[in-house]
Length: 206
Image (cartoon, rainbow, N blue to C red; front, side, top):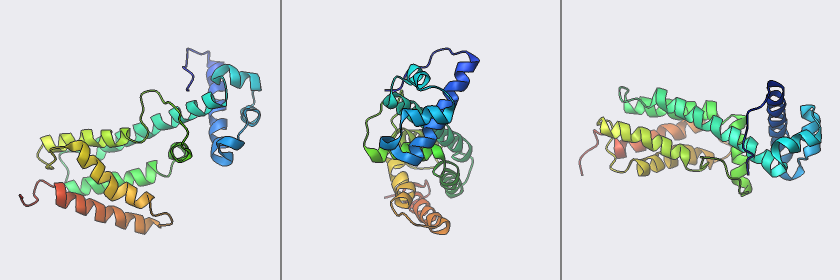
């Protein structure tokens, strides 16, 4: 469980940041099981006691790293959605710009690597206010609701539309490891085309 943060002195804030950075490095390089509090403390330049004082134990340290990474991911996705999924843009252009931006800025980040490691490990780590698997889809659903209200897409159920969009683009690319950048982009182009055909406001009425 992530340890609640409290007001810290500047020196303590710097130590906490150093410990989180060191822990992220060690978890990504060594994995959860092989990462030790001793190694984190040594890399951060603090005592093991200081790590325990801030995070209680290794589980608390890991949860804090995941919480930090997930917050950064959500911020990145939200910024991309705000800037790309606008009602005044061509739908295909907007969706492709959004998927490409997420692929280059978010899915290649160390924040994503941390969250991916957690999801693949099956570990249960409560992260305050965040559902790591579903919050990004809900954020996209909120933007799709705005697009539907503006008549850009036809989506009676924006959440279902978000799930379909994610499945046609990000999940297809992520579930096909080894694809080069051109192949990933081709997945996005095909996925966006299929989504626009299904949900675009100009599609033929049933």
